[in-house]
Image 1: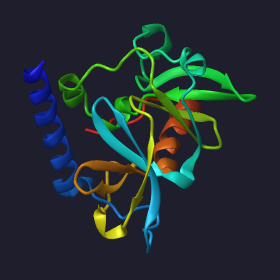
Image 2: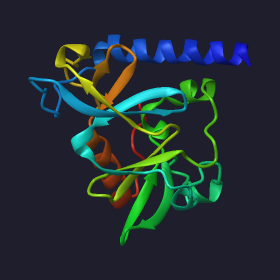
Image 3: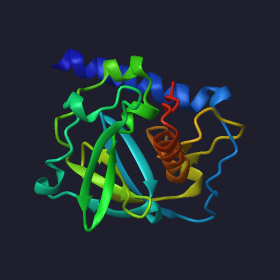
Image 4: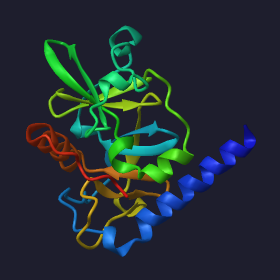
Length: 196
């Protein structure tokens, strides 16, 4: 168990270092840089920490009875050309498309080194007015971030979903850019570009 954990930590460190240092992956963010402290929701996916602006969230689902419809190990829910899509379910009179961001933001070779997800998520963060649900392996926690704690990208980026890195340990996601990929892929029937 300790050997696997050490391997996961090495993979995590290498991946985050690549995100920070890869000049080809930097961009001028579509997300406006805050001038003062801002609120985020931080959560884990496959052992990696991510955050989104709290304002981008429509809510968080943690009720096990609601989450039983989201099963990341059920191959019937995954489209062959959309490995991030986990099907859809009804919640508060809306259809929610469940997505596993690991299929988008974590390259396949890094995903192979990380912990396998449990079959059911611990939580789902609702975004895009509750029409998209990001599956999480931990209950999201609210954090306050100062702008100087973020390593902001400085050039054009092949990863438009990456808004920055918080304290070199947490990827700050640009939710509108991330969801634009889900929505355009869904309407065009094409697969979205992976984060590698």
